[in-house]
Structures are given as structure tokens and as C-alpha cells.
Image (cartoon, rainbow, N blue to C red; front, top):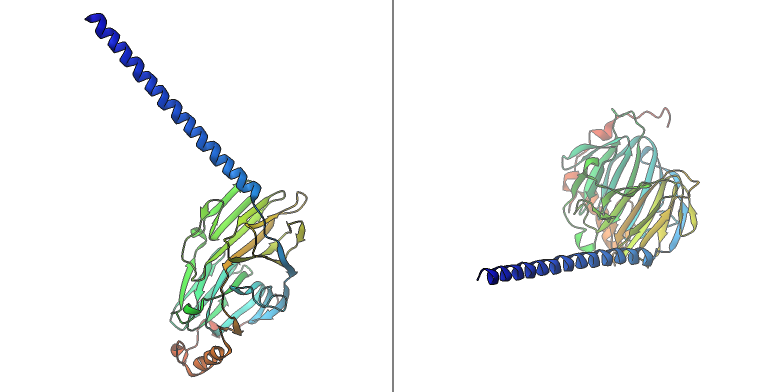
Length: 345
């Protein structure tokens, strides 16, 4: 009885050990297999990444805007009137005044302060300041009147990017709104020691931004790339995309794109690829992507509609203070009354 019990115990122990060994071995094999599949998938994705071809690249020429302001405008010129959903991109490089009271309808604006600070005020009573690294997403909707002036207490010279984006036709009569995005709210991706990405809107290298910043689906990234660095940025199908070089120079599909140049891409392909040459200097690049809107674009100044008749109506509404512009009657901003000195740039 003792021998039989001992033998049974040994067999049970061996059986348990074999089962455990099989489980562990199977687990190890499965884990290894999963890791191999993941690595393989990543390698395949990298290997099969098809960069979008360049549609057009050109220098953004400096021009005067607002009061005492110089901008380099890329989108919104004879080179590119519009590139749905994008209507205009200004790179403000010099300024001492700003943009006193003016209206908008039918679009969104995205203001990105690279240096300096900007005060804003509108006819709803909203006012505030966005500083270096901050962004402001403003939806004009059915109508807004506001002012944007350089902050008087900030000694740093302003450098600002402002993008105008079309609104889907069904949202052009929405209520106006603001969303300030502070620098500390913007996540950063660092895929390697040569690339740093501020993920303002969208996803890059697994890092996701805050959501619902704009009504029109968008992505926006701010890259700092060291010599020898390469960026591959996926762009959703059915979206347009373009980049603008703030500083330095990059290679895009074998083509050199220098400072202050914009580069627009064709819609086919997985995304955008660019690199900084080994013998180059640090580059700073802003990339924008947006869902193509299948609608007419009729723009006159700060009003963006889908027909000429609606543009005429927008002007009438603004002049008569109705249909979204009721609060414009007898309103003027405080910041727009500032005295501006033009002693230099």
C-alpha cells in the first residue's frame, strides 16, 4: 500500500510537471510567435510605406497684412488659391501691431504662437492671451467679430502661424466657439534621438493628441529634425496634406525644400516622408493634413461660403447686424484701440 501510494504520487507529480512544462513551452512559443509576427508586421509596414508624391512646392513670398504686420503666405495665393479643406496659411515673421476688429464667417482659424504672445478679444466678451507654444482653435461658424493684437508686455518678437480651414457646409451656421490649447497639453513623440514631434492634432509614432479641437477633421505636427533624421508620417486616406519649412532645409522624395517653402502632396500613398541631410542643420517643419470636403469654396475676404449668393448674404448680415452678427452692432474691442509704434521691425 505504501509503495502503491508512493508510485501514484510520483506519477501524479510527473504528470503535473509535464502539463506545466507543456503550458510553459506553449506559452513561450506563442509569445515568441506573437513577437515575431509583431516585429514582422512592423518591418513590413516600414518596408511597404508608400510616400505621397509632391504635387507642388514653392516659396511663400512676404507681404503686408493687418496693421504693421508682415506675413509669408503660402496657401491662399496665386500659387495655390485653396487646397481643401485648407484656405490660407500665413507665417507671421514681423509685426508691431496686429489685426484690429474684423469679422469671420464659415471657417475655422488655428493660431500657433511660436514666439511672443497674442492678445485676443471678441464681441461675445471673450478675451485672453496665447503665448509661445500655445494654440487657439477658433470656429467662426455663423459669425464672429474679433481682434488679435500683439501683447504689449512681451518683449520677444512675435512669430506666428495661422491656418484658415473650411467648415463643412452643414456646420457653417454653427455657433462660434474657442478652444485654447496650452503648450503643456501637447504630447511629444521621440521615435529616435534625431526626431522630436509635437503632436498637436492627430497621432504620430503611437502618440495621440487631445481630441475634438476642430470641427473639420485635421492633423497637425511640429517637427524638429536633426541632421541624418528621417520622418515618416501616415496620413488618412481621403485627406490632403502639405508641409511648411520654418527653419533649415529638408529632402522630400529626393527634392530639396528650403526655409519658407511649402510643399503640397498628391492624395495617393500612405503618408509623408522627409529627411534632413547628414551635412545639413536642424530643421523645423510644420505638417498639416485635413479631410477633403466635397463642396464648393467661394471666399471673399474673411467670409467663406459655398455659393456667391451666400457670400452676398454674409456681407449683408454683417453690415446690418443680423443672422449671427447681432452683437457686432456698436461693438469695438479695447485691444484694437492701442496706439501702435512703427519704429522698426
